[in-house]
Image 1 (tube, rainbow, N blue to C red):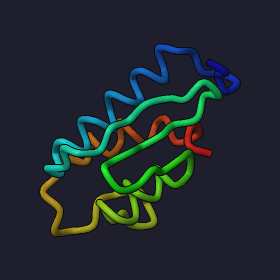
Image 2 (cartoon, rainbow, N blue to C red; image 1 turned 30 degrees about the horizontal axis):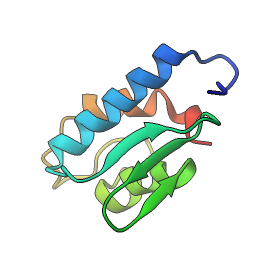
Image 3 (spheres, rainbow, N blue to C red; image 1 turned 30 degrees about the vertical axis):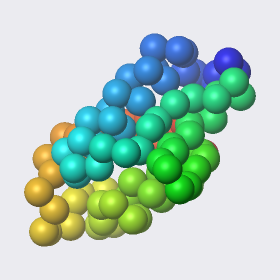
Image 4 (tube, one colour; image 1 turned 90 degrees about the vertical axis):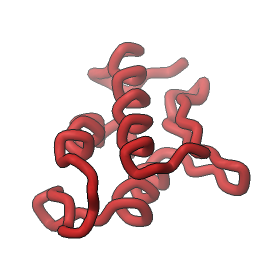
Length: 94
């Protein structure tokens, strides 16, 4: 697998774990997260495949809405720490 500069395989695994934790907190059980051989983050369910930045927009556009300060907009029953755990790997998406 190709790794982006400054990241190692453990970072990728931590990112996947953080995304999976966030999806579970949102009661989304059918999306699988993995890294392809080129180091790109992939999300896949029965109907769609999201790659790279599209995974980011799936999480923080379709599933959860964030304000301009990357804080969860009111009305979502998800802990901010779960969002923050994914956002610290934001550079892996782009």
